[in-house]
Length: 148
Image 1 (cartoon, rainbow, N blue to C red):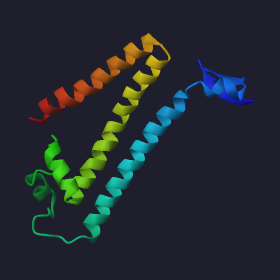
Image 2 (cartoon, one colour):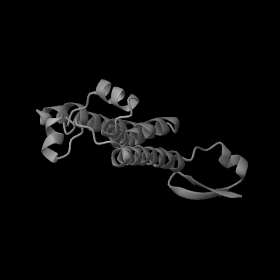
Image 3 (cartoon, one colour):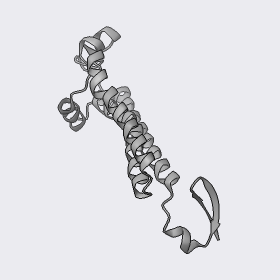
Image 4 (cartoon, helix red, strand yellow):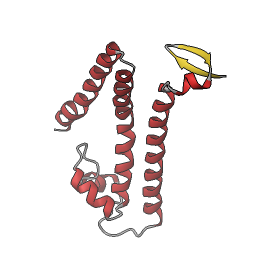
């Protein structure tokens, strides 16, 4: 005998009955856990690289130098980020970690859409698609407008 969360209730059943059920909370929990863990590792590696690395002339040493060097821009250039990560630029690695941290809730919402669709719960699919649309609209439309 084992427990399963199904249709809002905790149910007791045989193991064979529960193996065919998808544990919604476990999948969502893993998405959030892995996103935050990967993000924390990347940010930590970037900070360690800054602390132990050489302080070259092109590395910003003050807040005004950071803003002037385009590190503080609210918009993101994926090509520049990719080349920075490949070149082991600590700022680019930290930016990638922050990007993954920001993307984690969006991936969670997208995973919820797939899981609700697998359960054939179309009301929740529609609501979650709306939530995802609002999130993406705020990131890709409102964000760049605010950055100008």
